[in-house]
Length: 141
Image 1 (cartoon, rainbow, N blue to C red):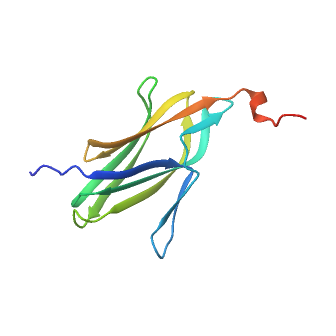
Image 2: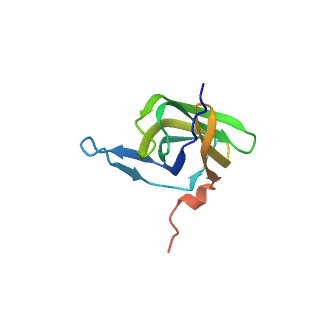
Image 3: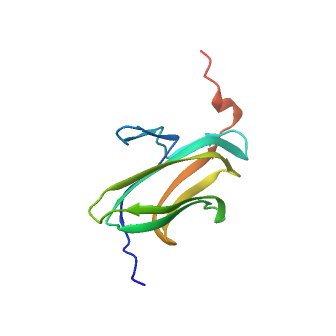
């Protein structure tokens, strides 16, 4: 078995939603963020989008994306993209996925980890912060 070439990851972004145009295949990332805010935990986020772009890969691959609660290394969820075929190493391939109904158990730092054939190729962290109830209301004048 030959060694799998580790691709070059050009981008790995977290957002509220990835929309793909059916004709052009261009992807629109809606609501890119570095942190989320919630009043009550566990907190359910309706949907999160993940976008990644890579090059220098060729062949058929399986990708896994894990969401980890960094405060205690607790796995939150896993998304699997099996049998992705990339034509040649010069090709730029981009992927957008939407993950419904993620539940965050507590405030803290979380990280998405992108693995290809089991090898970590990219990671993206973000914070989930707790707000007190009065921070959610508009200030009175």
